[in-house]
Amino acid sequence: MPLRMRVHEREPIGLALRRFKKLLERSGVTKELRKRKYYDKPCEARRRAKLRKLSNIRKGKTQSQNGSRS
Image (cartoon, one colour):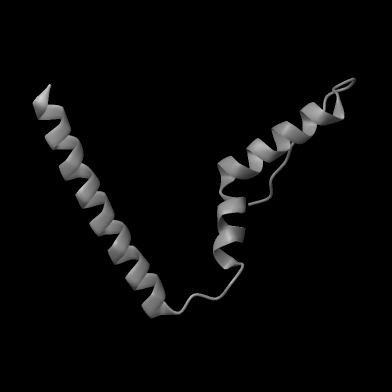
């Protein structure tokens, strides 16, 4: 999927760059580049996903406890 951005006449280059960066971020290109920068072993990816899942569960429990007190 090619990304296209039209630069308007008399638009400052700084503003055009800012719009371009936002376009890249919204499309997920920067996230994909960070992800592919280094090779991830499959076991490391599974481990990280498992830790992320446990972290979210813990965060959910603490938020529900904090919410019930007030």
